[in-house]
Length: 205
Image (cartoon, rainbow, N blue to C red; front, side):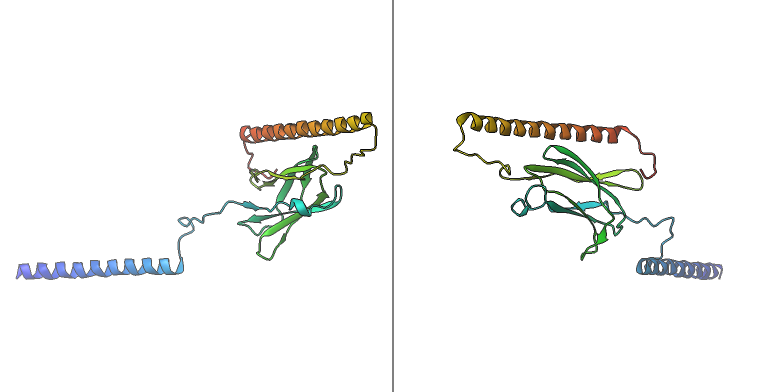
């Protein structure tokens, strides 16, 4: 008789435990179905910003000094008020331009545009996004180089001395341009080193 009573109690507890386990499984299914997760447990993965840019076609560049449009888009955000800079060199002259506020394009990507004079020979540049936490998102470097230098003509009817002087000036311009590009690259390297060495203050800069 005692054994029968104990067995009935054990069976009753087993049923209760089975019922509770069923409720736990059911609650887990509801949470998974509706995404009802405690804010302290849920973590949302944030995709890093990605710079989307297609450099201008060399063959479609306007004549030197005429304005051309540079356009850049930013993926993984819909924020059109990001701080986006264009840093580079046009024919050896340093460029540092803050792009105006962007707009959403047909693909819902924030797109920023700026007009700059077309280069006579070469344009090198990259984009830098300043994030609210003070970190920087740089793009790769882009180079747009004409196949030949514009506005240079050789008049074969001139005297040999004048022709040599013109050739000398052209070579000098090319050497100066090469030195300016190297200086620009050195400056960018210093900026990158400063970015690594200076700790972020956690605020917008």
